[in-house]
Length: 422
Ligand code: NAD
Image (cartoon, rainbow, N blue to C red; front, side, top):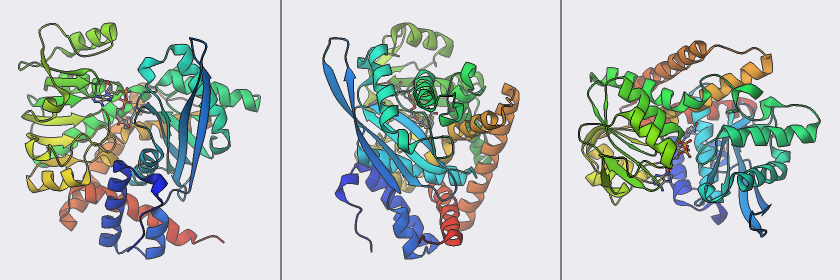
């Protein structure tokens, strides 16, 4: 039995990530030396980020960048701006990235970054200040062959453009490969913005095929209507699903007949939120998750399905758009109740797959058409679902356990052949 890693990493998400690793390590019969190494991040940096605010004050934000494991290659992982960010959460998310990249066969380790802030309360100029100073502070840890950040919760293409510019200015040349999820004009990839949502929909189609279901006509509930949730809504609506409930940080809305997603998107663009859409009924975020539906897509923040509500979740299938939306306790309850959970490491991996395409295109200075990106993404996602499904059936385990067995197994194998330095 191992000690729990030092208390500085303590957070609910980190506890869940460790519990998952420990269970899979036992199942895979991992050597204790490799298991113990994987429980700790390789390196973790905490920085303070002083920013001159619009009202003349200087405010100091706290930021982190964590490399969990780099045995398979440079580390890769998003940057999130959220009030809940702490070292434990970022460390857990970095660990998830390690398993995700390995599961998808990408030549990357796992990383994650975060700044504790409420991005929607910051002006554009203040957000730029946070981003540039954060980038300057984590400079020793990032680079095209070292660690490559991408957008995540509360960050977007503009954030990546500021990061790329800040890094490039210190190098005296443009270094597009230092981030992915950049705007097209400075070396971004076609299809990166939609990649995570598109990947989720590919996974869902393939899962429906395995389950013998028809997706068309399914009632869908989506928590989170940002980059991931809004793309999933539009694509599933195009595929004939009914999007009956959606929510964001301000609350939720419901329409038993299904929303016109184009009208919903226009409303969000204009007002900044899904709430108060004309003709929609209001619903609380908590109630939204518990509504009966064919597919529930948590696509906001972590730990939304927990011990306290898992027995009231009435979805037939949950596909995890967000990272870590289901706690370990909730996972066990859902499994017992026969709810099919398609885990984050598989479901939302489309983002990092197209980030990999962007990185490769940048290194080769050769850019692909959108149809090329989309078809390669679909192929990779579909094959991953088939592999995970086969493992789950062969080993008689959940899809999450099967996905983690493959991801963790590959990382462990690489550690085995590389050995322990010095
Ligand atoms: P985003 O910032 O574009 O959108 C987040 C959405 O969630 C917004 O609608 C916001 O209002 C809502 N939200 C935030 N806090 C909430 C709360 N407490 N309750 C309810 N709703 C809340 O972020 P995104 O890029 O869409 O990411 C969403 C999730 O998907 C995150 O967990 C992220 O880690 C995960 N993810 C994103 C990507 C990517 O490529 N962007 C890739 C993989 C996983």
